[in-house]
Image 1 (tube, rainbow, N blue to C red):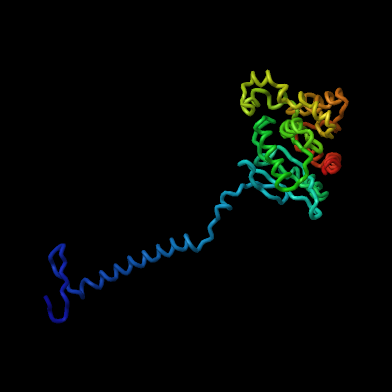
Image 2 (image 1 turned 60 degrees about the horizontal axis):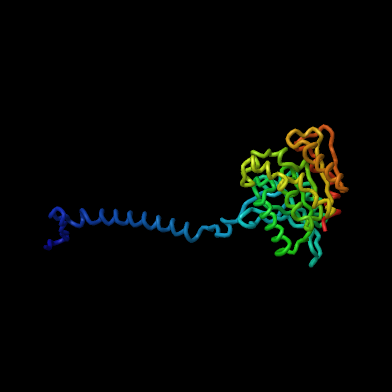
Length: 301
């Protein structure tokens, strides 16, 4: 139907007719508004998907760890490891390294920064792997062997690192050392645990060995560093520790003191510094010990 001056648009839902001058213009305005909103939403989505920087798979999956000095964080057998490079290394030379433990989420910490700076300045790298609360168990030792292979076989580092255990890191480093004395340039400890019975106690350590506390006690001589030191004495591995005389967490007489006396019975020695009046604490003297640094530099090759 046509009328002069206007078009009539049939509306099937109601059967009524509305002049274009009264109905079509408002409808066009509403459609334009809806289209504008759609275009804005599409533009926002497009900018998010294609314009904004996105983290790559490598970035999102990369392990995270804060270190006291700049270094590399990577994984070995699915476990976080780190490597702080040495300074002033000659091209083509084999780089010596210190093997630090325990490498836990918050360790090593700024407390180790002073001695780490001394090591790197002397051309010695520092590395470690997070074996969790392994207490020197076979599973922990397997991870340690994997790190050793990564550093020595794939990266060309020295085959005889100096192991450095802080507190329960003593159990981890000593346990691996007694199994691999020919691969150890030396061992040093800062109030190190040497005796599972002393710390963390057999009931706490048993799960790491996948044993009951009773079974771990029966097989203690198979796993306990202070009972398995003969290989270190026979291989004449250099040993050093600094341990306070009032340590109640890791008592001197049940750990480093006991290890020293047993080594001496076998004709070998452990160089021991005993700060008077110091316990299991963050005293600077433990971490800024020039004798410890000199020991590491001497035996890292």
